[in-house]
Amino acid sequence: MSLPTPAARPATPPPGTKPPELLIASLRGHAGHLFWSALLLIGVAGAVGFLFGNLTPPFEDWMLLVGAALLVLLGAVLPFLTWLSRTYTITTRRVIARRGLLSRSRTELSHARGYTVATRRSVLQRMRGTGTLTLSDGVDGHIELRDVPGAALVGEVLADQVEVNQILAHRDSQGLAFGS
Image (cartoon, rainbow, N blue to C red):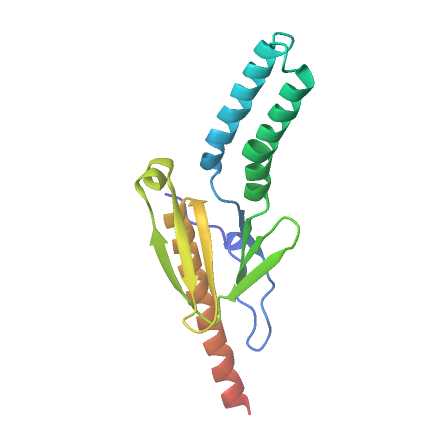
């Protein structure tokens, strides 16, 4: 086992100064629920390929194409865009959850303020190696990180960041109290 090099961990900032905000991780939920969308897309492509030009007289090819386009839009494109629109960012100062297609919503929790980390894993999530983390500060804010890959590791990282930021905040408050 090798020891970490001194450059691997950022230096502790001097008391009274804010540490730089560094990106730890940028995550999206697991794309496992898009399996059915992909299966629908393959099935629609196969059905259109088979039926195009072979429809009975009351139906026309343009009806087939419109129906297929609606199925693909509602069953594949919309779920993909919904998945793509949810991002979770973990920095050395805070956790940021962004979501929304047309109107964006952003929620933040500061590590220095502290919060609890609750992990929930269903049977399917355990099979995929994912989990849902709920971060709550107990007052007014909570963030739910849905279907996060490596949920146990992400939870440990978040707990470590809360501890480090609270230590730095306590150190700074003690230094300011004695310096006054």
